Image (tube, rainbow, N blue to C red; front, top):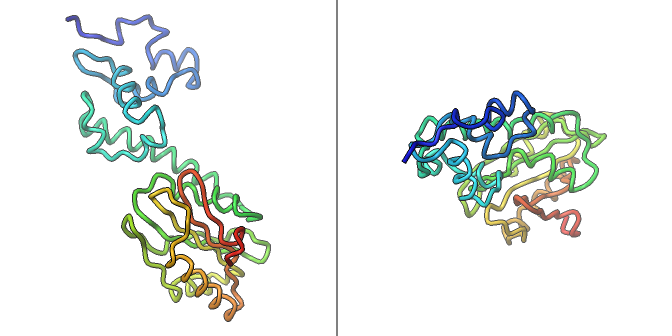
Length: 228
């Protein structure tokens, strides 16, 4: 069987040439992956390999971003170097979202919180706990990771959280942690922690405005649900 080679295609159909001629928006996801990996296998073009990779995650780039280097290497034609290239490109995309969100952000509702913290928590296979510190105008001063744990949970120490808030002279705090399972329902531990944090915040005149349980597709707001 004659090996398939992108160089035998019409020039306008080759991914690199297509990008130059028609612009980046004209390329499919598989063609963009083909540019990243550069070459395919003796029987598959780089575009074919890109299609197979995407097909394995139902053409969902968010799911693709969750794959590790080792998981990508399970695909034919993808060695360590190519897998690293794909992971790096997707990480750059995630950081671009993070940079855009880092501009002066005012929190007015729970959706604002969800969208602001999304670059940090999207696609994570483990649980993390973050805080968002606000000034008196509810403008974000800083966001900071407090802890990172396993699939089942993470530890959030009120002493550490309020120490960081006091050091930054914050006026209020928002708590955020993710549930990798996708279940937005708060656990008994989540409810207990929120109650404790609220009480400490009232004592220190540093109110906890909300506690968000983050999942990739939805969220739970303690404030919206009258639980704070």
